[in-house]
Length: 342
Ligand code: PHE
Image (tube, rainbow, N blue to C red; front, side, top):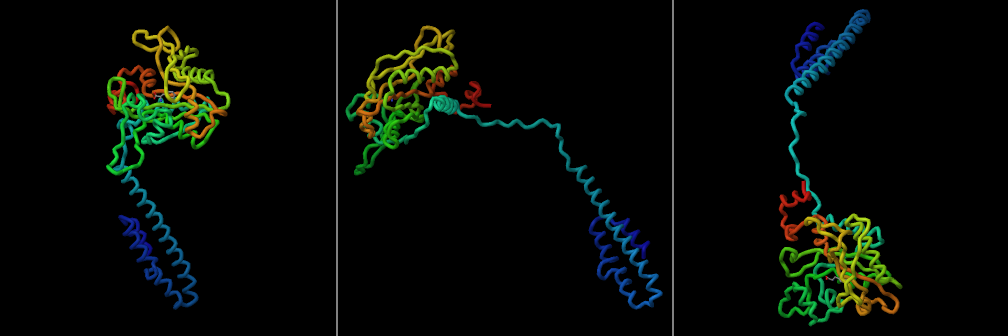
């Protein structure tokens, strides 16, 4: 019996055959188990001899089964290792990563710079009523500024008497919404999309502005000048820059100024903070008392400045991009050329 099983176990080709052998030998009805049951019928003398012998045989067969099982597993593993291999020396397949759009990058940069200056971010809807976009900003119905802005009006069905809505033509309506909701004092910027029906090398019907608004009891244009100077130095990474305030007119600020930054164009390359050229970058002024009133802020107690800057434009300036429209063409070759995509 011993030889039979030890031999069969050695020859077993797989785990299933081995399991059959285990059942046949030491399973409940296996040969050895049956023999053990016969021990009861033996005389004490016979049992004393046969009992230990059977136990030893059972142990030996169990050990042989376990050893063979491990050996079979080893063989199986060897087989897998031979067939399922991976060439880790193969070069990887190139994977193109998405990147942040340059305009979004610049927007994040601007937000970070103003955050350092204590400004938080305010938001407003891109479709707004003409009250927020115009009237509240002191631009009544037949004011020429409305025509100048090439406004996109939302279509209203006949009989729909809700107030007219527009695609906001600037981020200034966020001034009103913010003061209405939070009152004074405040210090916010409002970056976002704006729309005007205009299309050429430096205009796209959708573009981006960032509005600035600071209201307190004694904010002056000196504060405006300092904030803008700090911004321009941080954004263009220069230690010094002259700003030029040119008298201008906006219905929602009084006085109003357009702001130019000192620059030079050496061989077509813009250098900010040197030379004697000037580059317009934004419109600004002291918030008109009527605008404060329209927003529920008492102009006898509060005053402050506002400015509005074209984000795409200052992105073009920073990266030397000649055509604004390319920003929105989604042409990967163009984005790669300027290092905006991998
Ligand atoms: N909203 C103005 C524009 O779009 C810019 C501006 C904002 C001017 C705030 C003054 C104050 O041209």
